[in-house]
Length: 177
Length: 177
DNA sequence: TGTACATCAGTGAACGCGCGTTCACTGATGTAC
DNA sequence: TGTACATCAGTGAACGCGCGTTCACTGATGTAC
Image (tube, rainbow over all chains, first blue to last red):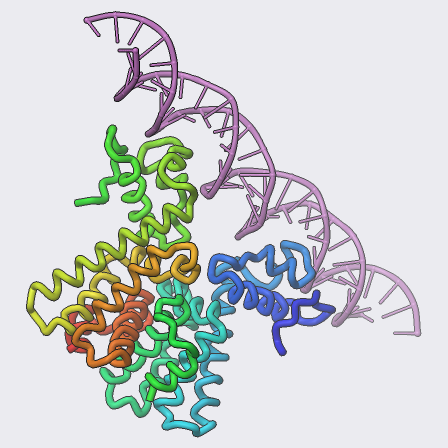
């Protein structure tokens, strides 16, 4: 749907660059994103990106922000689907999102966030994600424990640290309930 | 104690390089480690490292392995201290280790592990870490939930994602019990 | 309706950088006889 | 005890690479009168 890899045609180059960078993110992780390669994939000269982003970090921040939006939408959709109590549905959606878009997921909670003073919008987005998780969680500490669990399982699954379980999906349904 | 930054003197260059790389790991994370900079810090020419490691990935793998050893020791020491039931003590030690040595922690469960076919020793080490956690955990699924929780809280704390709580140490004691 | 001008998105050459890795080498240490 | 030789750890010059970023530029689009 969204990440076409063709050169853009008179469209919105900013969006095309973000799409390209997004793809890089999922292919090679954090360090695989470069302005030059994103421009290459968008079919544009190496320096065109500077029309739309102050520097590389600005591109990454925009990417992370976009990630949080998609993330929030995915969680809301999972709750709306009503297949499980809201709290359970959100937890499962959290892990599924991470597995589907590992690069995005890692960037969202990654090094940029640690330097959050420079990226207040990012910090706000992550706070909001936590607030959403907190609903129906049985208090703040319970919410933190739950957040920790889904966040940790997501990372462990992504890193291949969990001894083989067959399907990750089954594991998610068994553990998050 | 271990990570001296002085040029080594006729000692074990391999260990000196690992120490230097370890320091880089904690200063700048995964991507901040370079053979050249490690050699520089060890006071040695840029290519000396190739006497001791086949390539950069071999250095990183050795670093991760060393990390798992320190990690196992930290968990065992925490249990032996007896301040809390073993399962609780291990969980707390897990998070404390991550906070004390973020670079190590991230590397241990990071990208190398995902390509574990190339690094069987690493995979074995992470399996063993899980087995240790599993003791007194109330079954395999309970152990996975617990592992997820401590792993996730460690990451969230490292990334500054958890809204300020004052002391991380207090948070650990309150949540892991 | 037509002309003059400003705005702005993308170009392409160029910079300096640090990196991983190779290669032939030097000089010290140790071993064989 | 002394000499000849092999081993081996570290050197330093060199390679090619992709990167972020700058700069002066071109050419199209839009606006003012």
